[in-house]
Amino acid sequence: MGTMEEYGVVLDFLPYGKSTDTRKEPLAQVIGDTYFTLLEVVPKPEAQLKNGDRIYIGKGERDQIDHIKGRVNFIDLTSSARSGLKFAIEQIIKTREVEYVTFFNKCGPITIRLHQLELLPGVGKKHMHNIMAEREKKPFESFADISHRVPLLPSPVHILVERIEEELKGDSKYYVLTRPPHRELPHY
Image (cartoon, rainbow, N blue to C red; front, side, top):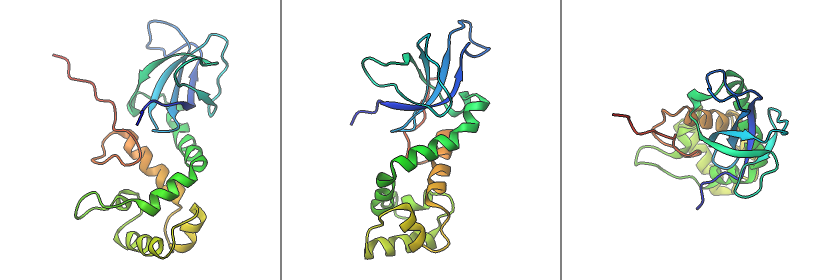
């Protein structure tokens, strides 16, 4: 399985780069729409990016992006990028609804005592058992179906957004919806 992102959503576009950068080149912070990888990319000089734009960042010829600078961690995001993060994640989840409904239908235990569903904010043992009982009767077909059949469960989209953001912050023990954060080796 390749782990390269093909497309990303612009979280912040800095036409003159970050104030801390020595080279003043345009920079954009994006979130990949497959693995939720946080990246910094350098747009082509004529590119006019807007927050929320979906752009091609994969291999080969890119129309708006010159090159990928690299992965960044949540802590490296600008305040503007952070404030747009939840919205970008929500848009990505909604466009991949089938995949995430499948997650609710198929996910299983991580350990003897812990189920993947319990990692979702607002899902405890009771909700987990309700979800599992309902999916055994008939697999869920949509987010609306999950909400309808599992009483008092917070919005499935909302809890996925919360979980993904938590994983992106980098201090989770388990990464079920994103790639683990990029860890740099300590310098000696």
